[in-house]
Image (cartoon, rainbow, N blue to C red):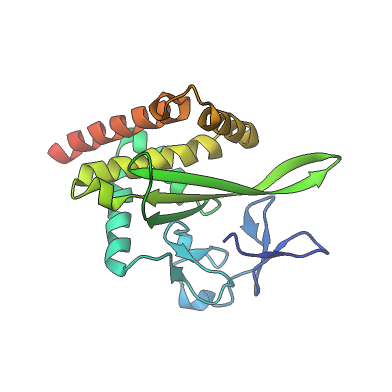
Length: 215
């Protein structure tokens, strides 16, 4: 979703066959292949699953580096996490068609997962304002091993980082605070406020999930 050209005449994101208005978070024209996806709105993007699919120009929905089995597994994980009271809002943010997340497996350095956030900016009257945020969540499956609940905890932990930014009144200010924490040499990884919040939310979600699945 982040790979587009900006139309200089109208400021819209040019995705080849469709134009995207980032100010309202909507395409202003229908998917040219909407008849192939009758179960979805003709204005949707990547079958409303931007975490695991991408659709660069509106012509084909592609997987983000996952096998069909992995996609099924991660969708199942998200469904289970969304069944909890605390996890529902976090997963809702992750699945929001206007929140651009790339979920992948890879290697991290400090923990079981990693979230990278970037944004494009426009300059107006000497100021710089974010117009589109993109999040990349990496889950370190090798470090997690076969512990399924640890895997679920890593997903919801990183999802809370995204939720913290996306639900903030001032997202740019929130990111600045997180960056200051990361760059503070006196703060250990688990002493950062954003990490503490994500840890608490993740542990709470897993406790709720275990209670639900015990029944």
